[in-house]
Length: 618
Ligand SMILES: *[C@@H]1O[C@H](CO)[C@@H](O)[C@H](O)[C@H]1NC(C)=O
Ligand SMILES: *[C@@H]1O[C@H](CO)[C@@H](O)[C@H](O)[C@H]1NC(C)=O
Ligand SMILES: *[C@@H]1O[C@H](CO)[C@@H](O)[C@H](O)[C@H]1NC(C)=O
Ligand SMILES: *[C@@H]1O[C@H](CO)[C@@H](O)[C@H](O)[C@H]1NC(C)=O
Ligand SMILES: *[C@@H]1O[C@H](CO)[C@@H](O)[C@H](O)[C@H]1NC(C)=O
Ligand SMILES: *[C@@H]1O[C@H](CO)[C@@H](O)[C@H](O)[C@H]1NC(C)=O
Image 1 (cartoon, helix red, strand yellow):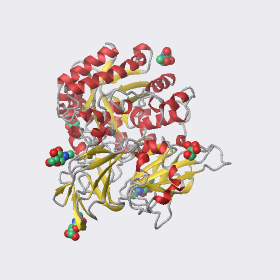
Image 2: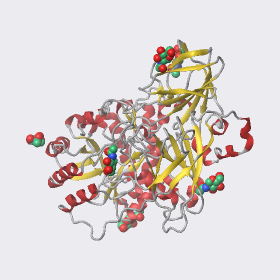
Image 3: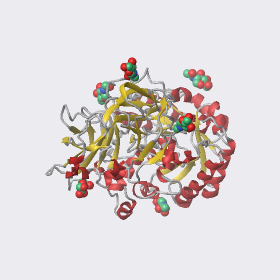
Image 4: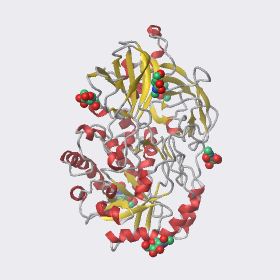
């Protein structure tokens, strides 16, 4: 959204955009513990420096506004300032433009990496300094890096560089700390003299052993579990994670009984709006919901788990008097009819104002300087493919999913690690269009250098395809500037009627009913009969939907994206198959989430939670 608009709204207390900021940051900023009314806030570097040297702290990204709000409400803040934050956030918060140097070693003493970190911290940390506790603000501690002991580089010079940089900008008084898996193995490369070492571990862990590990690095000082997992994350195509309240309550009790400090990760569930989700390896992107089975849900609702943990905390600390704030009401606005507005190919000129980049071989997103969303790769068929002819990505270089058509006729889907070959047909000279979706960059481990787009050559039968026209697509811009709506204008007659099966935009409006007090309220949008895509409401990118894979079926819609005074504009980009040719062309607004559906197609064997195994989290 446009910064100018945000700045104008800055004076309004809790304007629409601010509340959105709050929601978009629930995941990263408000996941903290509650015993001392402290929150642990994460700062995603890529959220605030979207292009190298371009900084964004406006509107939904106004970190100082939130620090002020915390201070005004008496909330203390622990800041995870990065550079790397993990958080199941795209590339763990590192900006994709770092990959412009192909061989960069992230999170190490690589000179280009350090230079970028130094510049960024030179912008971020001076803004934080007035909010340090000793300067009258809410920030009591600042975390440096995150779980660095789990990263292969083990570069003490890098940690020393960060320590020096943080001290330079924040002074000598503030407590700087690190977080690592609770074992000497993890602390070996994650802890550094001068940074207070804390640990993280899951319910069910041996609390005594975990804190003994911390003691190996910190013989004195507070015991701290800085990420105590109240639930767990999800991946598309795997079952929804649930961690029983009793398991968490039991370990929480042990932690508190040992006199230790604990941060509940997550305390409130969150949402990966737009394209912000990360992924784990082997490539498994996380869904839009980051509910996490946390004590407060994605919508901030009270759960049984909340009350179970509150009871444990009440054994050690006097609970605040008065009533618990109630769960917010949800509203089922019902069905909304959508109409086909046009295919991606039909609106291509509006989506790609700059036009195509020509290249013999495919270029990656980073080479195009487009970091998120979708890019269209076009070439022509070099020969007649009358018989089904294999189009393949021999080096598994479709990152991450490609929707393939020939002269507007859909051919199938290629997918990283899952579908490396499809058959296509078409005449020599026909346009071969490949819309490639970036489904989220790996946020953990050595695979952070996650290039997107066609990252290796495609072959048609034996031949390497060449002569590409590559269209960077600004779909969010097009949605915001009404380019997709222009298609309703009569010029369309010149356009050939195409199948519903190629990536297509649908639009519709939701009117909030009159005569009911306190509308709009939160809601959830359901996609009956739809397959996979992206949805915007009033230009706000709510995220990806993929009911065909699950487990998430509904997307959370905070009331703040809705207006009661005018119809709400809905844009859906369906990538594979809409219900519109056979069933009702509708989406539905319901009053309950469904993020735990039975999977239609379980994509793999039982989930290989490499990360959990490695970290000993579960
Ligand atoms: C934060 O709150 C404290 C205590 O209410 C107050 O003394 C201080 O001036 C506030 N700081 C800022 C930056 O508003
Ligand atoms: C937990 O760890 C401690 C310290 O290593 C050990 O003495 C104890 O036996 C462990 N408890 C369990 C139940 O394994
Ligand atoms: C492609 O077509 C060939 C020949 O018809 C067939 O044997 C093969 O199974 C098909 N491959 C795929 C991936 O559909
Ligand atoms: C495609 O193949 C050519 C010729 O072998 C090679 O020079 C080029 O680097 C490859 N491109 C990619 C993106 O792999
Ligand atoms: C919906 O789109 C129309 C037409 O472009 C625009 O005039 C209107 O302001 C939009 N409504 C909202 C709530 O943004
Ligand atoms: C999903 O969660 C709801 C509410 O907890 C529960 O009733 C339902 O059985 C769950 N469904 C599946 C498929 O696990």
